Image 1 (cartoon, helix red, strand yellow):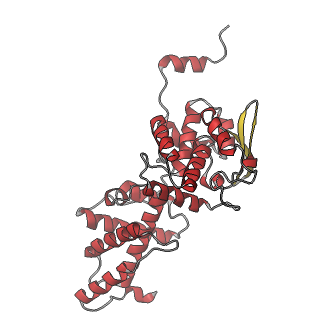
Image 2 (cartoon, one colour; image 1 turned 120 degrees about the vertical axis):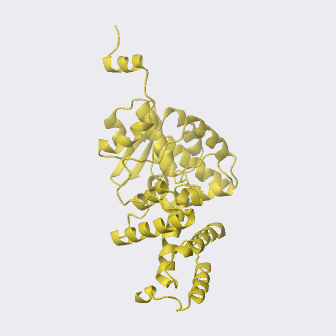
Length: 328
C-alpha cells in the first residue's frame, strides 16, 4: 500500500505508458463489468490523467479507477444514464457519495469525493461545484414515474424476451408500483404470500422489521392475480425459475440489464417504482399511519421528501377536505 504514492517511473512518459497499461487491465470488482461499462471507466480515467501528479503514480490510478468504477456501478443499479455529462455532474456525484457508498469509511468517502471532483474538472475543462458529503436523501429523493410513463413502461415490459427477463420485470413492477415493496422484499414474495378477500388482494411481506401485510393498489390487483394464477405455491414472483430468492443487488442488476438490452422508454429502478407507489398513496389520501405501516416505515419524516411531487389541489377541493364529514 505504501508504494502507491511512488511514481511508476521517474520518467514522465514512461510512467504515463505504465499507467495506460494498468488502466487497460481494469475489469471492476466482482461482479466484473461488461465490456461497454469497462471501456467507459477506462476512458474516463485515461482522459483524466492530465490532472494526475507527474510522473503519475499507482495510487492516483488506483483511486481514480475505484471511484469512477463505483460511480458507474451505482448508476447502473439506479438506472442513471451512463454518460459523462450525467455521471460527473454535481447532482449525480452528490447522490452517489451520499447514497451509494455508505458502507465505506469516512476517509474513503472523502477520497472518492475529492477524486471525482478532480476528474469532473479535468474532463469539463472548467472548475466544477465541489460535491458534498452532507446527506441529501431527505431533500432529493429519486423521482417517481408519471402515469404516462408507467403505462408506456408496462407495454415495454410485456414485450420483453426471453421469458425469464419478462417475468422478472413484470413481477417487480407489480409488486413495487402496486404494493410499494423494496428490492430486498420483492425477491422473497411467493405465490403463497398473496391472498384475496372481500377487501382486496394482499401480500404478506417479510421486511427488515418482521412480517407485515400490504394491500395491493386497486389498479394493479388483476395484474397481481394474473401472476399467481395456476402457479405452485412456492413460485417466486420475480424469479419463478429459482427455488431460493435472489439478492436485492442481483435483482437491481437484472433490471438494469433488461433496460440496456432492450432500450426502455423510461429509465427506472426498484426505488423509483416504490416511490411511485408512495406518491400515489399520498396523493389519494391514504391515512398516514396506514401508509407508514404498509411501507414498512416508522417515522413520518420519511414521507416529507415526497410532498414536492403531489399536485396541489384546487381551492374548492382543499376547502372540502378540511371541512370533513359527509353532507347531510
